[in-house]
Image (cartoon, rainbow, N blue to C red; front, side, top):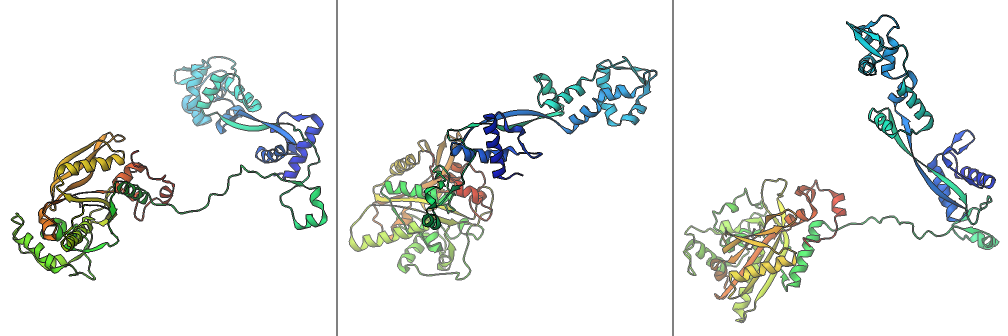
Length: 499
Ligand code: PHE
């Protein structure tokens, strides 16, 4: 192709001679046509210095396809069929096919329709002496001119794939306020040499382009789940909750299950549902006197309960696991709270939350992974009721923009009553299950040493579900795990749950 300097000199020369260039579409240097894409770069730079002005000319040109060109050169199929039939006598259909191949098949019908030929017995014969091949003539004209005035015909030819429209862009170029053919090279920097020689005084400097877009800096970004976590965290903080320490993924079965009055035969404690550790496999680092009270309430009952009546084993409680819910942290926090109360004799209401990873040995599918994030809220106070739980949940979800809630009775070993939480989702136009909640049982709270007029309301939900709904994705693997979509994770906007 041509150099910028060649193009610039040619353009300016033509304008100096003729006053303007009406259309750059046929501009050539030597015998070679100049690419319009090369011209625009030169025009822009000359325009920025007001040497020229230009306007863009957009045109739609018709071009012949391979098939269209074949018809323009050799005639339409029907004309070729006509030509292949002798002026007197006829030709059999197989013989015509032999001469013209596939063209015979396409052309026959149209030639009959145009009454150029007709059937006579088994033969095709001419029905007229001369024909005018309009298709060929039109295509020839289109090839020469690039346009045709009959829009309906053009549409038809496009449908027959004989012509296609090609957009072309070219330019009209006029003199600018500072038109000259003697364009000085623009300097981009003041150099030491220029300063020393004094050359800078006469130099022309290139203007700064303050509109140029900078290179997008490469950067990391928060994972969508972390953005959602941050939003939940803000909501809890606004409501006066403080965060529980959840940095420990490994817990003993004791805190994860036994302290929560979850019997040792419970199916969730099976290796099918829980990841147990093999090395180290056990730990007995939990308070022994409290352990005795837990053992007692499981096996014999107490605090008004008849218990489960089975042989509770410390070996089972010692098994280490990856926590299956953050309630394993809540149980330890409540135990600590009870010890503080025992020491001081002073009761203080608490509002706690946590948002962190939990692990379940589940079969993986589009909406389940072996690890996910749980949001948990815990409120302990004197005389709290189910009404407080429902009110607290309404307050909490209102902050997320969720106003319609429904509750369904459920069962958890550690809460009574228990309620599943459903929210009306406007976008999905249905009720979606969003969490689980309840009031911790006396069999859980009293062995810890909490005062018996204190009740504890709590709820839990996942961050994955609302994140998937927010991002409009139906497969969790896009969000987490080895097949996650990094580009999507990077582009995802900041968290705005349902607001
Ligand atoms: N731990 C429960 C779960 O894993 C959630 C929950 C938390 C339920 C607190 C009731 C009270 O789903």
